[in-house]
Picture 1 (cartoon, helix red, strand yellow):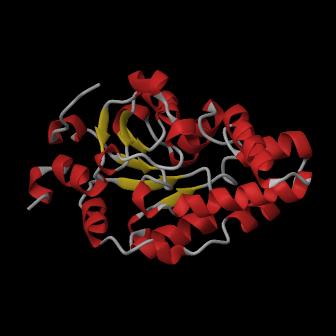
Picture 2 (cartoon, helix red, strand yellow; picture 1 turned 135 degrees about the vertical axis):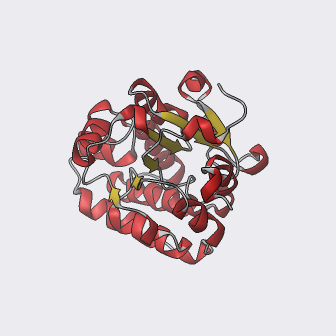
Amino acid sequence: MTQTAEPHHFAHVTDWVFDLDNTLYPHATNLFSQIDVKMTAYVSELLRLPREEARAVQKQLYKEYGTTLAGLMARHNIDPDDFLSKVHDIDYTWLSPDPALGEAITALPGRKFIFTNGDRTHAERAAGRLGILDHFDDIFDIVAAGLTPKPAPETYDRFIALHHIAGPTAVMFEDLARNLIVPKSLGMRTVLVVPRNFEPTFSEIWESDPAYDDAVDFVTDDLAGFLRTIAPPRLSR
């Protein structure tokens, strides 16, 4: 794992790919906790389980299938549209506009994409609240992925084919190291976005990825600062 990022490490990059949740906005906002609660409630109602049992089922589905949605579809044939609309019915005012991040993204040369296991509406609302939505060329969501979530290789294949992306000229930013395994194998630069000062979050225990460290080239707890650091000198003035 490279310790210090410098502009020359990214001088070849023409396509910048960003996960959404806990990547484009920081863990500290805890926005995803709202979605997490909604997913537990959905499982509880669907399976008629007490909340704690439903949460255990939800996390098992997540670990086994990559997302709770994929697990519920596989085991219970649920309507994905119904699930996505219900779990993303959250309060986006938890997010604050981030002009510094917007400026840093704008300064990057080439195309920029959001690649998320959530749906487009959620991505648009979150990025819109951050004030960065207009800086992206497209959003590749779980629907575009055929409802197959990262880290499935076929999902990356769909994304790459749709946007004609060459791995060696791309970089991917993620908060989960396991979602960087395929990008790394395709020749992409990989950046893991972690909580500020590595502070614990509600999800760290069950989302810890120590086995996938080899998939990570760089680590940052300040995305905007990282992007400013690696921007070409002529664009960082």
